[in-house]
Length: 303
Image: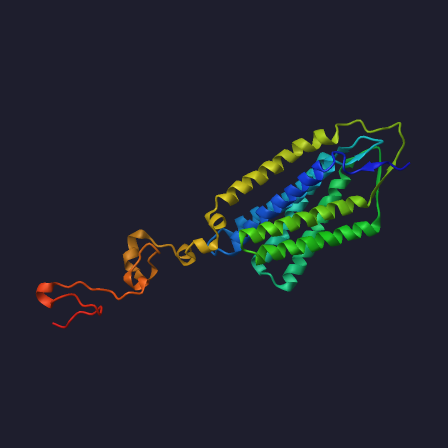
């Protein structure tokens, strides 16, 4: 007996919320990767790790928010906690492999292709592990062609995200890229869900555990809090808030010790404004009693 599947139990609420979480994770991840690549003295490993965790957590959160709206009318649905947590770990680790590869090896065609395939397969593995965590009175079956299409979408989306991470610098450009990422990730999820059919085992042995909502909502709380905290870190980072052009990057890369600033006139900060910076000749003051009035040529008169 085939079960009646409804992927939009709460209407547009779960798809929209899922999409927004995918966009949030993508936006935070992109900004963290940009931060690591365009400032040589930043803690690259830390920013890349934060970016990978944000992207992986956003994708995982998107998946399970969307799954809150999934139901089979003839049976209740629950989730295996171990497999659900494992799917989160897989998402973060696989995204991290791609992000670190691009972050340290650069955006060459070979690196982007390999990293995109690894990350895309990780996203697909997260999705199907999450589906394997489903507990219901029946068995889940998949249409092979649609599964393959969903994996292709995941790989393309992951490659595009990695390319955007190393190619896009401006805030608005990153925001636009994160919106596109949200569409791609959500599209992969609902494409994969279109491959699902449920074969029921009968009506007598219906699963009687906790409901999907009662299990998923507490599990989603931690990742959502993490994304909000990551957002705070990104928002209060000066380079990401003000943009690269606002900082004197040479000064940021070679900070001056105030105790020795006078020994390095060539490295004075912007606040040390001189006549030479203004494009006007320097005026050297001399003792009018010994050498006459000041010279306007910037040289002392010979004694």
